[in-house]
Length: 538
Image (tube, rainbow, N blue to C red):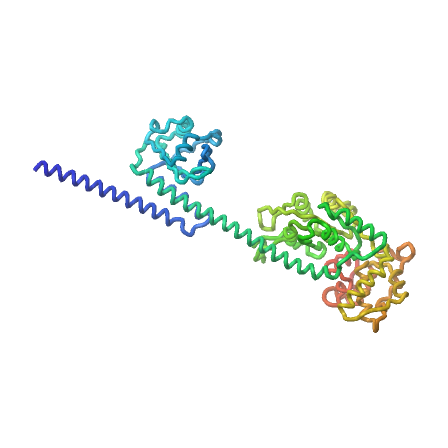
C-alpha cells in the first residue's frame, strides 16, 4: 500500500512538472506571438516605442535587469547598440571613456562560431580579461549572450544581464533568447528596409519634381531665346565684349555683367553659358527686379509644404534647379538687403535651406549676375553688401550702350526686320538712307530693346516694302560726342518713359500697355518710374 502511494506521488509530481512545462511553453509562445504582432503597421516613433516596450516586457518575463540588441565586429568592436532597456529602479551608472574604445576579441571569436554565453554567477562567467573588466564595472552577476546572425562584417547579439542578484536562467534560455532575438531583429531590419525605400522614394520623387520643373523651365527658355539667337554687332566695342566672353566662358568664374537697360546683358549671360562646360545643363534665370520682395526668397531657394499660409506643395527653387548648370541673377542690384546675406552664403558654399526646412541643400552652380546700377555707389549708400559685391565682381563684363556702337545699328535693324517679317507676314526690302541716318543719330535711352520696338512698330505702319519710321526721333538726336544735345541720360530716359505712358494713357500692364511697348517687366517699369520721379498728374 505504501509502495502504491509512493508511486502515485511520483506520478502526480511528474504530471505537475509536465503541466508546469506546458504552461511555461504556452506563456512563451504567447510572448513570441505578442512580440511578432506588435510591430505590424508601425512606423517612425511608434516603432521605436514598440521596441522599447518589447525589451521591457522581455526583461520582466525573464526577471532580468537589462536587455539589449547590439552588433559586434569579428575583431571585437561594438559597432552599434541597436536598442537597449534597463530597469528604471537601477541606479544610473557613469560610463567610463574606455568602454567606447575597448575590444572584445574573445567574445567575438566565441559568438562567430555560433556559441552562446550563459552564467548564473560572476565566477561562472567566461574568464576573458576584457569580459571580466566590464562585468565588474557594471556589477553584473548573471548574464546571457546569444549570437543571432553572423556575416562577413560582424555578428548580431541578443543579451540580458542580472545586476541586483545572481540568477538561474531557464534550461532552454539559449533557444528562447534566439527565438525572441530573431523576431525583434527581423522587425528592425524590415523597418530599416522600409526607411531606405522611403528615402529612395522621396529622392526619386524630388528628382522627378526637379526634372519636371526643369523641363517646363527649358521649354519657356526655348520660346524666349528663339528671339535672340546671337549677339549682333561688328563694332570694336562689341568685339571686345565677345573677346571677354571667350576669355571667361571656359572657367567657372563668377561674372558680373554691367550695362544700361536694354543693352543685351541677358544675351551675354547666355553666350557665356553656351560656351562653357555647363552648356548641357540649364541656364536658370531670375529677374530680381520683377519679383515682389516677399517672394524672391521663395523663388530663389524654394519652400517646403506648409512653410507659410497657402503653401500646399513643396516647390523647388531656381538655385536648386540650376544644380550643375548656371544661375543668372538679372538686375541683382534690386535684391533686398535682407536677402543678400543668404545669397552670399549660397554663392560662397553652395549651400542653403528651403523655406520651412532645417535641412541643408548643396548644389554646384556657376553664378552670372547683371545690373544697370552703379553697385559701388549702392555699397556706399548702404543698399548693397560690400562682401556680396566683391563676391559677384570676380570678372566684370561691360556691355556698351547702343549710342556708343552706332555702326552696328544697320545690322541690328536688318536682323529685326527679318525676325518681324516672319512674325507679321510682311517683307521690308528697302530701308531709306534718311531712316538709317535718323536711327544712328538717335540717343537710344532704351538701347537695343527700344530699337527692336521701333522697328516692329515701323513695319506695322509701313504700307509697302519700304520702311517708314513710326516715331519721330529728332528730339533725341545726339552730338558727335554721343551725348544728348540738351539733356543728360536720366532726363532722356524720364522723357521717353513719360512719352510712352502718355501714348498708352498711363496703362502700364497688359496688351498695348507701356511695359509691353518698352519691352520691360511691369515691376521693372514701376521701379524706374519711382527712381525717375514719374507720377501721373491728377
